[in-house]
Length: 96
Image (cartoon, rainbow, N blue to C red; front, top):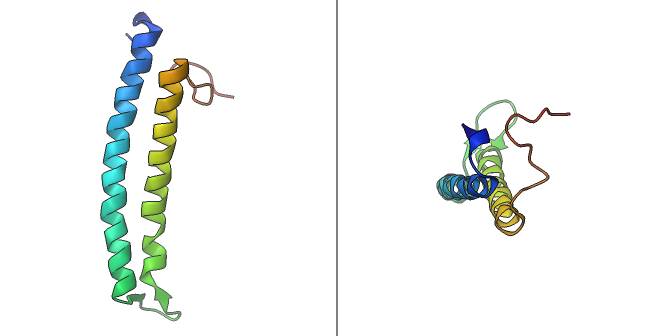
């Protein structure tokens, strides 16, 4: 079905889905950042032989989600200006 749609329409559909995904991951970033900040302010530690601050374990989730938001928004800009993103494989294209 995807092959039957015009390329410009496919680009706009990809833009919409990327914006939806960016909003979802932005909300995930905010929520997990609050957990990380709470662990920092309450000085929480993971029990064990080595006392490890729990905020260090929490930190990677909001950072990764924020990085994904940046990449999705970059993809939206490229699709809106060029109509395609050479850094992303189209569906059905063989990967290297």
